[in-house]
Length: 237
Image 1 (cartoon, rainbow, N blue to C red):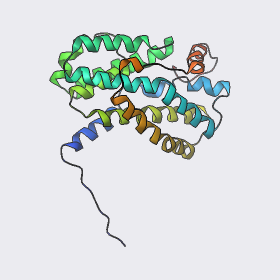
Image 2 (cartoon, rainbow, N blue to C red):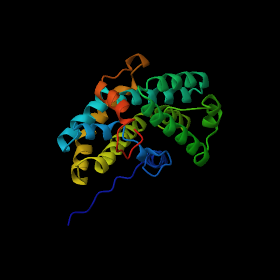
Image 3 (cartoon, one colour):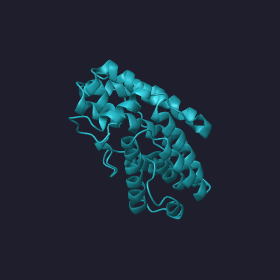
């Protein structure tokens, strides 16, 4: 049997990697499991009915919808925290919240963002983040909270963006396993198929300006309105 080759991570990178895994895991107390980002309505409408249609739907959300915007916002939140620009962070948060096209999607980002920031301040104390927190007293957009926390803790932007993108997709695949006729094996294949796209989106977001923000997933946006009055539902969005 060939001998396995183990390549250790540099000591400085291990805590950062574990921190990102903890922050973006399903166990972090942000309530991500309660939101489907319009996926539940898409299942009801027949847009998502199998593995192929799920992959197509998620691919559009990633490339043309909220994930691309989220990654840009994460990056700018990260930059604001690094230079301890509280006023800039507050302005970024106001912009991020204004981008939510419906009440449900506004709740999705603001509830998770507020919960993420509070949990991180309590469990991962950091002087920089504590100094910035008063500038975010009310609702906080989730990508802004993640970006600011990562920047305040000195985490590298590249891995932060990639981890955020993967967690976003994993959460929606998890929602699909509960709402759509898609099994775990199919869900795993969807995540694997989207991983290269997530890498490219994260790389593009590192240098993107706020002027690059914009989305073109109109059916998802309209579906989020219709989900509010959907007769049977298990998700909050």
